[in-house]
Amino acid sequence: MQQIAIAPGAAPRRKLRLGGQMIGIIGAFLVLIGISALVSPQFISSYNLTIMSRDLAFIGIVATAQGLLLLLGDIDVSIGAIAGLAGIVCAKMIVDMGADPALAIPAAILVAAAAGALNGLIITLLNLNSLVVTIGMLSVYSGLNLLITQGRTIVNLPKHVTFLGSGQAFGLPVTLWVMLAMFLVVLFVTARTVFGRQLYAVGNSREAARIVGISEVRVRVTAFAIAGGLAGVAGILLCFRLMSAQATLGQSWLLPSIAAPVIGGIATTGGIGTIWGALIGAAIMVVIGNIIVLGGVGIYLQQIVTGLIVVIAVALDAIMRRFSAGN
Image 1 (cartoon, one colour):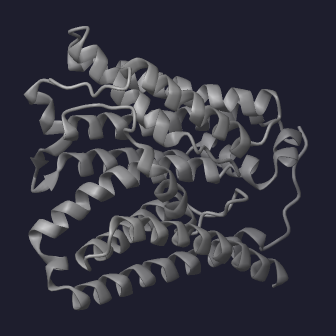
Image 2 (image 1 turned 90 degrees about the vertical axis):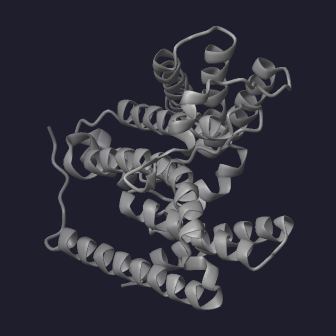
């Protein structure tokens, strides 16, 4: 098996840049918190903090999923639709088929993971662009959600499942605990396992990864499946929180899922960043969104601001990479 030559000191320099970048991101987040608390006294109220923690739970899960793919240099714009598919399948099984939630939940997560894996297979086996493919699959899954629901809202979910969507444990929303558990698993996988090292290797250079014997197809399809499963968890939790499921479930998560990892320092070209960045970026997105709401800004302007954040984050990512390359 051939080995890839790495320049002496290259890894330490990369870690140093990454560490400095994370310190900068965390510093920016803390400054944002301070400014938000000064701008609106309601920001630090227990009620508002609970609202933000619930928002962070959902955005944090989908941002972690998208961040995993960005580390590969891939992207999945159908993540929101996959999340909705999982929520709809779960609700359909419980309400219309009388299935126990203990069976419906894992079944729906498997459906979401299979949808993600299908995306990965199409992209890797046919050597297609992930953005183009997942735009098409976004339409497929959105249409499937409409087909299953027939455009109607699925209601009459049993009340005991509301605990998973809106209950609290140890003073924090259950959804936040689920998000933290999912995040820690992905963090461990990316930072401490062979698969994680292979993930970064493929993200850095697919050709070099193939030379050393890494199966690019296996790594990328597995990552897409994990991302789909994570999105499925978020969709099911939102379904339980709303006590209903409809075809538009999860559609608003597309832009935050992309913006959060990029804000957190995960390069769109792959191989650079850490999954920590996805969580911190998600927290920044939640704080910005919350301040917009507290400031009484209309829903339409909120969408404009979110879109601008995505563009600015991607632009800054490109500028920083060029600056680092120049040094």
